[in-house]
View 1 (cartoon, rainbow, N blue to C red):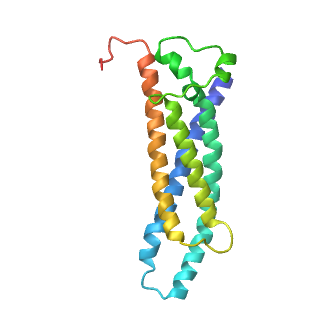
View 2 (cartoon, helix red, strand yellow):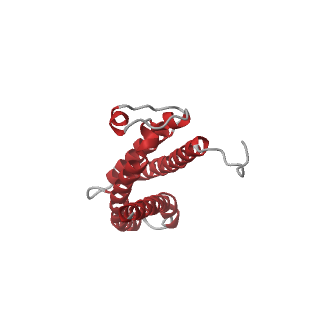
Length: 188
């Protein structure tokens, strides 16, 4: 009982940190890519470069911390929900009990209507967005066309959030459809 309580607290805190880290990364990217250029538009070029350099230095820590938290908490969330991503969902959908753990580990099913593909798209897009964000803040000088890359990454981050929401929705829908019908629950 105590172990289960600890795991539930860890999973809850992990989910919270994942969402907060994503919000901080998206907010920082939005500010840096869309607000900063407008705010410093009237400055002279040397001043613009100085402000961008300082902002980039501060933004670097936001990106590195967010990236670390997102990857760690994403791994925890994946561990927590692997049953829905790996194929146990197909047994639930068909009303069968999940197979023994040894069989499930070697078997992988991904269905269009299942959470596995949505999770895979979310994870791949999230890793790509984190790599782009880290590439934008590494080194002493920014890469060529930093605003283009920032705006592209902002769009990618928004798509990744959509994929996360869809993954959760599909996973919860699977659990709803596989649960026994309650007389108080309205029919679809």
